[in-house]
Image (cartoon, rainbow, N blue to C red; front, side):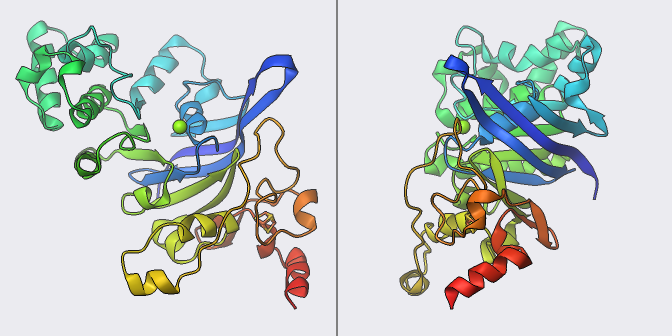
Length: 331
Ligand code: SF4
Ligand code: MG
């Protein structure tokens, strides 16, 4: 498998008032393979959107690297390089309305990338390209003359997708692209994204706040907690064998349609609120809410390690030496 992106110890900190620092993303490391959908989940405030934007270079990284096809995106400074990366990576937003200029016709919105990157030479060519893009996402040329407010949420998201596709990107960050849509429309947008991925060999970073949302569309899933990556596994493995106590709790909260299974299931409650990323807990960030917390958890930050093939987790429960403490306590 070919790595399209390598994210290495990526940090994004924001300076806020009185010298405090908000550690939105605080050292995450993972790869994204060409052609896959990598689902990134976590509750709001965990840093997943900031991670997506920093990977896209919408935010400058505080530390760490984002390597795209062998080149460090954040080290590039020349205008030519930046334009090249902007073409390769596109973003789809949660609120398609807010991201579409209300004064521009749909045609001009979709053509923006074509114009910026000078991908068409004549007006006729531009119109043809736009119509083709609109058709690709299930709209038609007549829609091109209208304005964003004339469309429903699902159609607006299609316009946002057409705009992203215009420059023929390889990688798309989709930041909660269906969260704001009606349930009946969500599946249509997911199907569209799936079809486009197959036809164009696209790679997705699909950000969501809910594990059930990414289950069927992701090849692999990463779970973030308070600026750190807690666990990464293939989608099947994560749902069958969640290893991190946080993931276990998130999964136990998803209702199962089979009432038999649902009744016999144990709910794991996560107590307390998400601590502040300005002053995160020492050691393991989840320790203030973890049902398995041990002494070592406040002292040492658990390493993010591959504990079984393709399954990475940051938790002392899976380290032999600390595990003894856990086992001793269970006796
Ligand atoms: Fe819980 Fe400790 Fe594992 Fe953190 S390292 S998830 S506190 S057991
Ligand atoms: Mg967000």
